[in-house]
Amino acid sequence: MRVVGVFLLTALVTLVMRSTILAGLAARGIVVDVLVLATVAWSLRQRESWGATFGFVLGLAADLDAAHWVGRHALALTLLGYGVGRLSNTLVRDSPLTQLVLLVVATALHQLWASAFDASGGLAAAGWLAGRVLLATITTAPLGVVVLLFSQLFTRRRGYGNASGSSAA
Amino acid sequence: MPPAERRSVVLVTVYAALSLLLLVIGERIPAAGLRGVGAWLFAPFDRVAGAADRLFSSWAENTSLHDRLARLEVENARLRLQAAEAPRLREQLGLPAWRGLTLQPVEVLALGGTDPLPNAATLSAGSEHGVQVGDAVLTSDGLIGRVTEVWTSLSRATLITDANQAVACEVETTGVNGILRFLPTPRPRLVLSAVGLADTVRVGELIVTSDLSLRFPRGIPVGRVHRIEHDPTGLMQEIEIVPAARLARLRHAFVAPGPRPPADGIPRPKLEFEPVRTRGARPPETRAPAAPRNLNRDSLGGER
Image 1 (cartoon, rainbow over the protein chains, first blue to last red):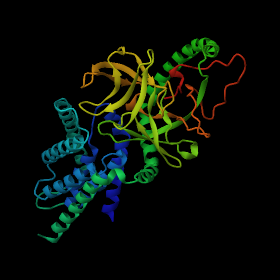
Image 2 (image 1 turned 180 degrees about the horizontal axis):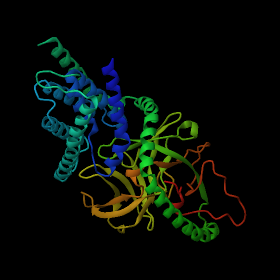
Image 3 (image 1 turned 120 degrees about the vertical axis):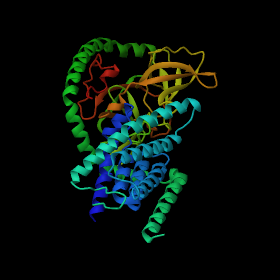
Image 4 (image 1 turned 30 degrees about the vertical axis):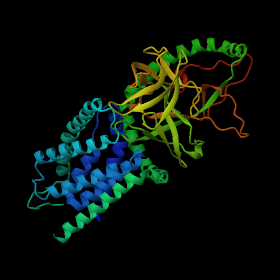
């Protein structure tokens, strides 16, 4: 029951931040992919089943908000949540380097996938898309590592564990 | 395969299948009701987040508002003199009379669809405040979008940064017509398309909503010409526009009634746009000569 409460709270905070503070930043060109950040953080902690569920719910909410291409975020975040959850069984999840690499890969994949729906303009668009993916990645990944670090400090336990499965979650 | 792993594979397969199904049939789902429930649920949290954001920036905003107020007072005095003769000149030229639109002040609670820019906004007024689908949404700087979904106490506006939104516009000085669209790639920008090569447009000119628009009142500022290029066919101009409204800082806006179909079904010529009143404010006194009214776009609302 506690997991469900934290699940709902995390999703709520993520969506509110996305539609208020981060939307203003996005209009200035600073893209923080908070959907990926939250999904990766949740999947690292709760493994693949909860990771996929969290990604699906969060993605569906974002899709309904965007009104176009319903399902694109849901599909991408479901697969990312599942993938990161599976990997968390075999990786040292407490390592900031691991978290950074996961966030870089996940953000790049999600941004590429989401941008593909708007893509037009051939090679001219490729440069802009690459820039957008790069920008989102270099803002989201380090921020994600810091958020995960604070999350661990805040909960005062080793919430993410390691490959042997010694998670306190 | 362990049962837990099998369960997670089934789960992710179901989610992926559902997502793919939504991608195929998503446009046919009546999602407006769901968005309404979501907006209602999130509105209190959005208000809290918005209040915190405002608190942090209130000092700087207060200073800029004082500057703006001083500038507008000077400008208003000048315009009052000019506005006194405008009705007489319009009458002599046989032009339709000005119509004062009622502006409903609203709060922008949240922005939606940030891929790559916000393309929708949740507004703090709904049908109980008189907001209807089709109403124009603007700030004191210019047009930001149009109301597309209305609920009891909230509504949702589609912004001009939505790729599916098109606005009939014209160049203020020359009356050259075009269609404003948002192009997300190769880089996100507002473009005035369908402008003939023979039409003269200069960088820096103001673009306003056109009388040809069936959705927006005429004369609302939209943006300024930033760059002029040929479209891919080489037959038309493609004009890049810098939006007049600051889309990165949307907090307060106004809802202006869009064109309504006449009750008797007989179309009438549209009246020109003169935003002078906010709902709840006292209407201006009528006396001869007509009371001076603000005609400048800066006088739309004042408060940001």
